[in-house]
Amino acid sequence: MTRLNNADTFPSLTLQAVGGGTITLPHAVAGSYGVVLVYRGSWCPYCNAQLAAFSRATDTLSGLGVRVVALSVDDEATSAALVAKHHLAFPVAHSADPDAIAQATGAYLNDNPRYLQSTGFVLASDSTVLTAVYSSAAIGRLVPDDVTGFIRYLTTQH
Image (tube, rainbow, N blue to C red; front, side, top):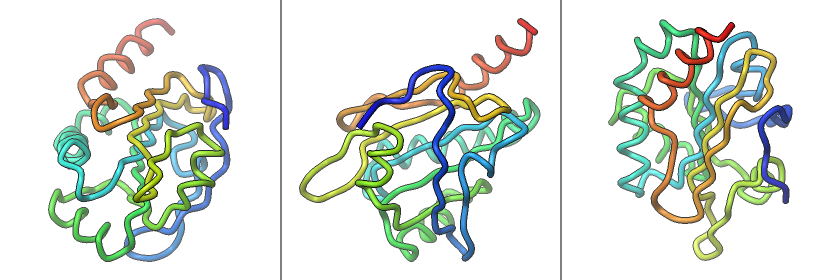
């Protein structure tokens, strides 16, 4: 398991989407800035706060050309309830294989119960990693204010 570094290409992942169908990363965010949020589960208060904050920032992020995708090991019913609770307008994947995601992205794993620790990626339009935030426990994660500030900074540099 290797952590993704800046300038690495984000790996190809196909995930089950809440509401049906699949989400293919990084294709789902290609052509714009992308944010991939791996959250621990709907039971995690920090994850709920993070997802709700990204939901509230949807207009700002969209205005900057940022697409957000979130994923966890939660089953579809649990994930759908979370989407409804926080009115998430971005795609959310469910039933992610924790070992496969950890192998592909370097996300930390919790053993018992088995789930992924919070991990976040900001991707360039060509699907390369601009920054990665890895948490090994409950705290430490991407927040929308940092993402919007970072994207604004990047767009002024080009």
